[in-house]
Length: 493
Image 1: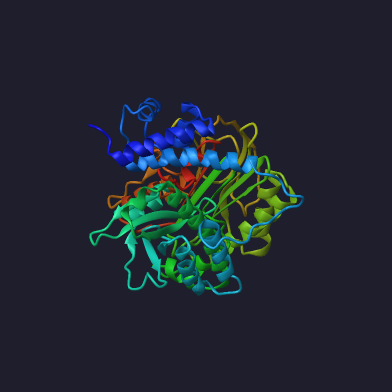
Image 2: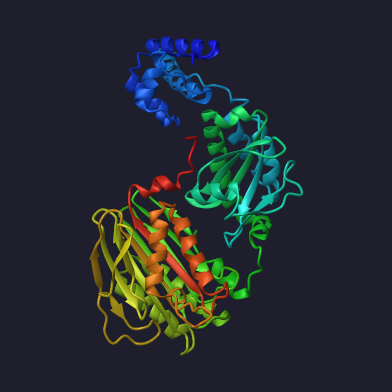
């Protein structure tokens, strides 16, 4: 079938521009693929020579690839000035939208963010509504601005917006009323925050790679603002707390770091359940240039006293870690804080670990706690039983430091007894085997690390019919330089 006249003219002009840019076919394909192109190199070559027709969105990606190279050439060949000539602020586009967000969120409460988003989105020629994920990671709650009033919450597990959140992939849709929209993941660093509903006038814009990238920039900056501005008020927290927290849960939650974080060499993601009624479980981590510090602590009990013990243990651990103390000294600091400042019944178990990010050498100490698990190639290969000491709060009789050499891509699993000792209606425990199976399924699907955690914890909750008998905490640490890609919200592909 012959290509339409418009398509053939576009192809010829692309070919001419390619020659002007001095791009080889291979160089052009690499640029095209980076913009989300789907055609193989041989298909692109056939298109350029008139032997194959591409769809309009694919042709536009090829055109954009050539035009970006021409823009680069133009910038490099421009005549210089005697001094730096600075451009005025743009009045449209992604930079203008980000600047507008910055202006409108300076010295304002969190309540002002939806209106600021309305103004910023208008500079991109779209309308947008922010949805925040609740703490249970079950629903996406709208924050209404001009375009978000009277909207219901959306499920995470069975909706297109939920898929964008779960997989960190932009999802284009056209609703029953003909409204074309992009559901764009919103992250703060690598912590999933929610999704952005971007409404466009022309359904063809859903295939526009430039719009996808502009919306990604807007959503990424918006995620940082949610984290920064949210500390100054309760608006976002009220939206996320679909189930009210107990006093002890509020105490512990305020001390915890973000549940997902990472660097170019390590990723960490954790979850504590029940999020609205947690008592004695805490997690912590810190990244130095070449070392990742990890901790899971479980104070005995499940009440405000347990929360106070967990808070004390966490503070003692952080103090010792920031002094540069060894793992033995860190554990002793937690032990002393519990023994000296709380009553005789204040005990805690835990795992403290240090991972050398250059070599993969892991040093760890389990204090009366379940041994960490090592996952390699998607399978639990061993429990790390070398590093042991008694429960924190009891005088240590003996202690031994454990060491393990990790391989690139290995996953370290730290957890509390609420994970493996969770019982179903018949009294059967969840156990290490089921934990390993659940981890293996999530890893096999190549899910982002926080989604693996969410899936595993969901499996444990279903095992107990949604009612936990004890706090259940899971922390995964992935020594990788490749897994980070799954935590970058995708542009059009």
